Image 1 (cartoon, rainbow, N blue to C red):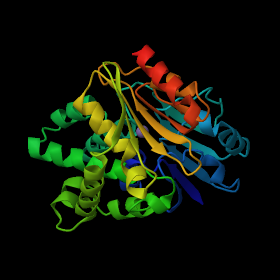
Image 2: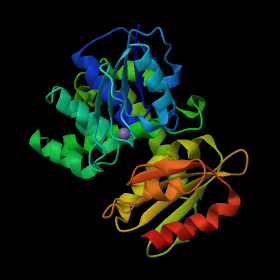
Image 3: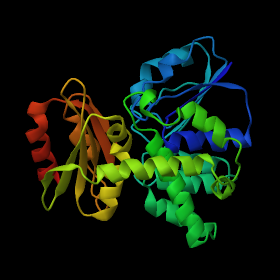
Image 4: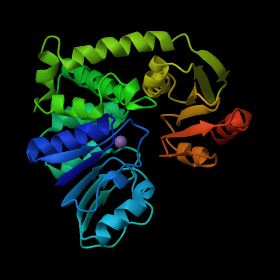
Length: 316
Ligand SMILES: [Mn+2]
């Protein structure tokens, strides 16, 4: 059995979508909420082959080494930190950590633009606005089409956030299977009552609640807000962070969400005009990590909040 392992956000889902639209294949899907990236260990060692999309190789290093040692062919495409890439005839890896690319854009190149409309939606969804605009322009998309694909990317990305799949409106597996019926996302958007409109309604309701969030800090370097421990807040935390970042491109932004154990889940965005340091800052704290432009901490203890605020204010 072939296994398709992918991140449950817009970039991961749409990366696989493009691949499976181009090369339909019976496969077992392995995914989860956006933060659930330790996925490769779920693949059994009797798998015939594996595709891995949009999850850090560094975080899946051991499981990858085991698959390769068992002569299982792995096709790996990603834009997160990879650590050392194993040398193996069984591994085909495309890793590009450029802050302006994402897995769906890498797959778009791999497929010579066969499903480029989907890649545009994914790039918008991963908040790679400049890259999305560039591709949209190459494709001569109208302003309306661009804004529709942008919304679609944002909604699919939004759907990936939650503590568990229970928080989500659609499990990433179900969403992937639903979207697979649409080689062109503009057809999905044109369909009355489609999943696009269902996600839109849910997104707008959650965002309206987030606008009331408590502001922890707002200075020249950064703005940080706190959201309560509720399903809507866990769903909206990441996209709300992107929205704040787009409104004030010169500031770093962090969204804090309280966990059941009293610690905080933190999602940090570097200033859009200076996409550096977010991953390094978060990696200084236990359970933290991510990319230069966007990173997070899964469990920040209350007593470390001040030191986190200080780190961010000093860095930018
Ligand atoms: Mn991604």
